[in-house]
Image (cartoon, rainbow, N blue to C red; front, side, top):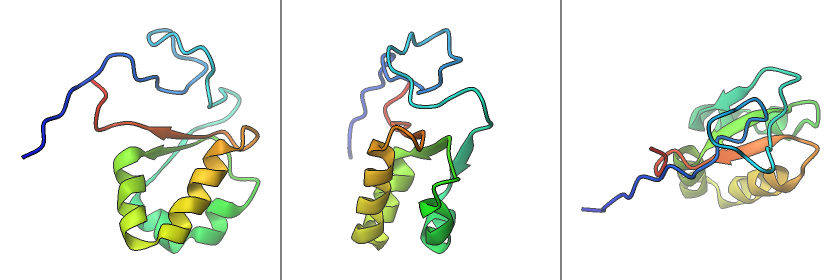
Length: 97
C-alpha cells in the first residue's frame, strides 16, 4: 500500500487561475484546453506531435501509463512538454488536493 500526501501547492498551469498564484503558467487563455487520456496518446501519436496542437494538459497518471506502454512515446511527450511554444502541461493529479 502506498501513502499519498496531498499538496495545495501544485500549480494548475493556467494563466487564468487566481487560486494557485502560478508564477510561470504553461497554458495560455487564448484558446481552449485539451485533456488527453492514455488511449488518445497511444493511438494518435502523429496528432500530438503536430505543432498546431497546443494548450494540452496531460495528467501525471496518464503519462505514467504511457511510459509503461511506450517509453519512446513517453520521452517524446516529455520533450514536447519542455517546449514553451507548445503549451503542454503535465499536471500532478495524483498529489493535488
